[in-house]
Image (cartoon, rainbow, N blue to C red; front, side, top):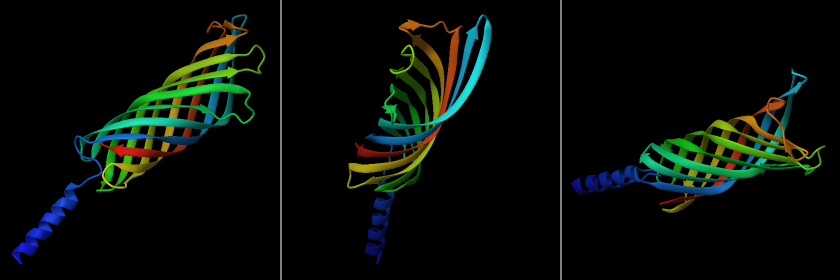
Length: 212
């Protein structure tokens, strides 16, 4: 009887100690993200010293490649660095563009099982966006850069000890002031033309996960 109790206690201890994230764990992930976003573009054109402001709204779709590394600080917490690179999808291909993000991602493990985890994360970082309107008058080129903040939730599955998949849903908000505007191959003075781009949206991400 005592042997059975000891064996059950050992099995229970093993199950409880085996976790998706542990102190000292390293999590690598690479995958794809598809996002849908609402945009707000606020521009100011100064004519003869008089500023004329105009605001327009729209929508955009993004396709990006996220790469991330997370370091286990405690069983319920890890801290990560990420980079994400891609573009806005333009169905008529009138505007060439590229976007990049880098940042810091604290992650909390609401469920931290042996082969399954339910995660909640924050995203704090910087965003850069370059747009080249090849068919526009004067071939305008815009460079935006600023900050972003986001929150995500998702699940992770391990198929063994090392390899698995992660599926996440993420909300992200960007604040992107115009840094440079080029028209007819000349950079315009920001006192003549200034703008601010706000982007907010939701993305779905599927990634290959490797735990070291």
